[in-house]
Image (tube, rainbow, N blue to C red; front, top):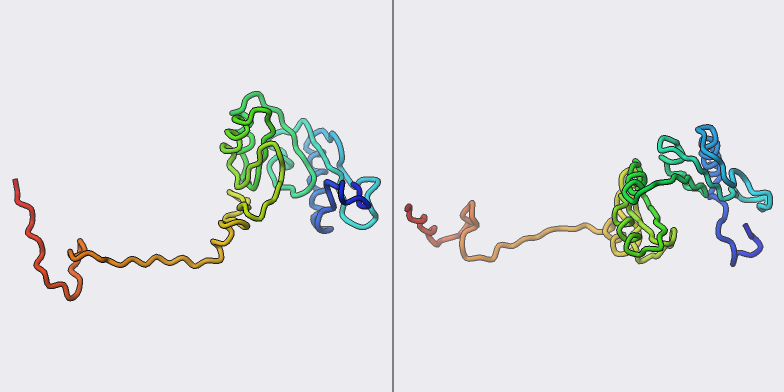
Length: 192
């Protein structure tokens, strides 16, 4: 945290006291459920007196049934699990009721794209995390929401789409004869 040097700050405070307490509750749950607190876990000693600062927090030895693995925390908390295969990593990532975003870090660009496409989430990043572009759609799947904000897709929620179809043929529309139609119906096909 470098509040006096915003040009080098990478993380700021959480938005409110309510969110601050919620994130600290997740940190307490991680400890209580047996995850190992690798770093962070509370307010940084050098944090400014005002603001709801939480040190970047990393948990290891996380299990798939832990609260910190299964819920969206919306704070600087990372729950780390290990995996042996790409398929296992994708299964771990997708085994969630939520699906806002996911990131894959890989030295193999093809693998990074493949894994990102396999994630069941609304936003996927490869070799980065949380870049925000107003031109790109933003939104989740599952319990992380429906619809999209930002970009062209974000405009759709402000539109009222209407379909209008006009029949232009001189032949009657298959299942009824339109009013004012004067031509005789075509003869049925001959039986063989």
